[in-house]
Image (tube, helix red, strand yellow):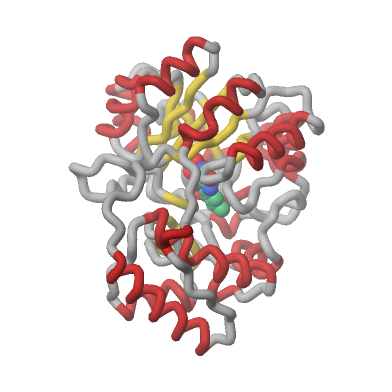
Length: 329
Ligand SMILES: Cc1cc2nc3c(=O)[nH]c(=O)nc-3n(C[C@H](O)[C@H](O)[C@H](O)COP(=O)(O)O)c2cc1C
């Protein structure tokens, strides 16, 4: 969970006997290496490194970005949040291709990714080096496409899931399939180990996932309130107080569809009805606002990524959260 997961969380999860995932999507090669080394210093167990596999932005629409910057400047002024206009020519976003050498040099044995497929060269570089790859799908068509590309396992992300949708096929509308429907349908069509993601928080939900065809489960929201999480106090409180109906899908914070607890920023963006620029641009336009909101506990401007069962989270160490899930089985 980019922005939430720390090396300490990854190591604690790995040491508890599960697979911790270190998110490095969009980070520089230098920062990626640092985080990998910090994690290795805390565990001897394998952990996954998680990449973003989205396509690069096409043509820059300067007018669209200008309108968005005007709106953000006005909104931030209203809420006393500092806003700095950005020169889009200085935007820098790292792609997964920039990180492959670091992952191979650091002998990472498991690579997961979201937002797309890896190119054939990347897949074969990982295969040649014995790296296990895990793609992420939100529809049967995406699962089939990823299987065809040669991944070793798949995360199946239901609509309940917190955070960004991993959806990537341009020729279908945003898939919004619940895990109960999606998982068995993928299991019928794709012969790969499946990891169920979305709304999993206790024995019953884990057992249901296995009954529907999963070989493993993946949790996100449940770890946002962990001691090792980077989430601010306001974010943790919002999660702990969440109900089944508290979240919604939004593109407001990053330009990509994601599920989070509804707040003022999401509502104001909805009301404004302006075009939200493509992921990499909107994400950068919002980065300082999000960081300020996290630091100063301004709940209404934090990207409160959370799934539909996030309210079932508890404050505990990552180790304890994982052990509870495992012990209860
Ligand atoms: C705060 C947060 C950040 C996330 N960041 C990532 C990420 O960087 N990479 C990724 O593959 N999935 C990410 N996800 C999605 C999770 O991998 C997973 O699909 C989801 O959390 C499962 O649903 P749950 O939140 O109901 O457990 C994130 C989820 C959350 C809640």
